[in-house]
Length: 211
Image 1 (tube, rainbow, N blue to C red):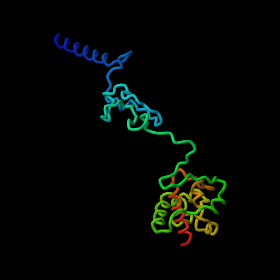
Image 2 (image 1 turned 90 degrees about the horizontal axis):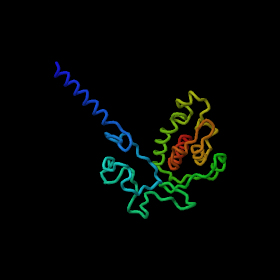
Image 3 (image 1 turned 180 degrees about the vertical axis):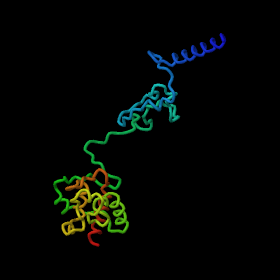
Image 4 (image 1 turned 30 degrees about the vertical axis):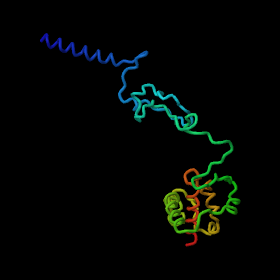
């Protein structure tokens, strides 16, 4: 029995010693298993970190296999090893299709309706794209036929019947502006729908009105 007591005591001592060894403090921060799982990498896109060893234990945190610390984010092929460059002053961004930011303010619907012209050609492809986008963004309120018979309209009366007499003569520019800024119950969709897609929806709405 004594030998079993000694074995039990030795086992408890070994476990205690192991747990003590896992403690962290001072310069000894202990051992970590899979540190990338709980040490988040700071994401600051405009901050340049040129120190290739940045990321503390580079040999442990080098998940990309490029011999750099996890926080190193510089590009040696660009001047000053920059990854992102601040644009020149007063430049205006364009979309991949060349569209400039929409500048007509929300309270100028009449101006938009009179002056805006769709840049898209009158093709079947544009109409098909407009239908796809309409079904995605508009059907739930205005309904598939545009007659305000979508499921949302049952809960919130006042959704526009796009085929009604009050809307028959609105222009594509009018529709584009309303999609961008919203009107009445409709919330703005300018941040969700790209300009080209807004024009496609406007084209399809006019198709629904003329059926």
